Image 1 (spheres, helix red, strand yellow):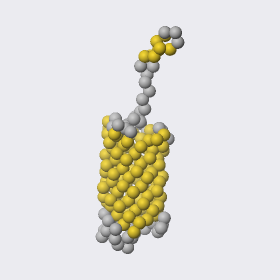
Image 2 (cartoon, one colour; image 1 turned 30 degrees about the vertical axis):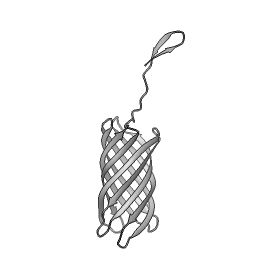
Image 3 (cartoon, helix red, strand yellow; image 1 turned 120 degrees about the horizontal axis):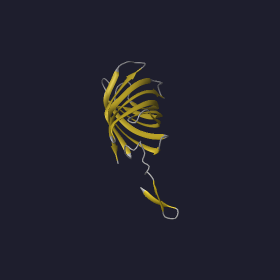
Image 4 (cartoon, helix red, strand yellow; image 1 turned 180 degrees about the vertical axis):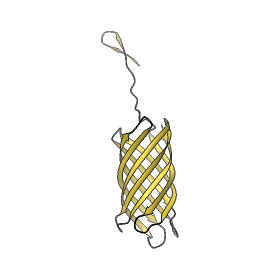
Length: 161
């Protein structure tokens, strides 16, 4: 960009762009798995999430939903995670996050709704400016029962401008 500064003196400046500019909204499409630390057993299913960056390099907010299929019943959960991003390389970043979740179980001994807290470590790898993949290990604790679980979500990233 060429700017005129002072009495007719041209100055060349570079237009500043963010290295984190993968899109206004980042969509995550993938698969989720969760294992109870108390009861054992694993649940798997699809996961969808959307992420925005209200404060560059300081805060990213992700809202997601998973439909897991434990033995004998179905579970649908939603979460919102507040994350602090850390750039590892030009194409890789780590985000550490914390946030609430709500889970709805359709039938079985755990039928009903519950809520709790989740801690997540989100690794994002960008193969292109607006496309990449992610791996997100997590730990959660349900408030009602004290149940603890570890989870892993992985999939494809799509930045939308």
